[in-house]
Length: 192
Ligand SMILES: [Zn+2]
Image (cartoon, rainbow, N blue to C red; front, side, top):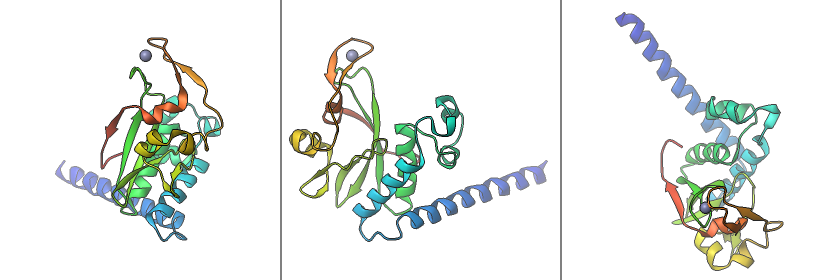
């Protein structure tokens, strides 16, 4: 039994190491032409957006929930939260700090969209992997504060339109893209 546990442990350790090595290689490959953290964040965001799609290859939400992040990546399927978490893993391989943000409807009842944020030059910039929008202010990737303060300039110059959404709980209507400028739950984690 002891031998069995020992062999099993070695197997787990090797698996973790292999997974990390693959992720490191993958991240480096995607960022090979980048010199700044901002360029790396953009390259990783674009890569994950192109690679993982909602209902990608015919997989559904249940497939995403019952499989690992790397399975989702390799099979090209993922909604905003899974895309954001894969981005976070890849960014971490570049030494870039990230966090997961559940954007909230103004009534705070629902979270219609999940994004990541990356720390560049001590600013937490928005990384909307699911939409691959390039939100900028003063030629730098924008923070949520930038988006709140300069909504028309930063948000409405990039999004195609601002549809009205209804909260399924309280039926309150709101302008969808205002979710970036509301309060948010913030999850800071090393295990996205
Ligand atoms: Zn509500």
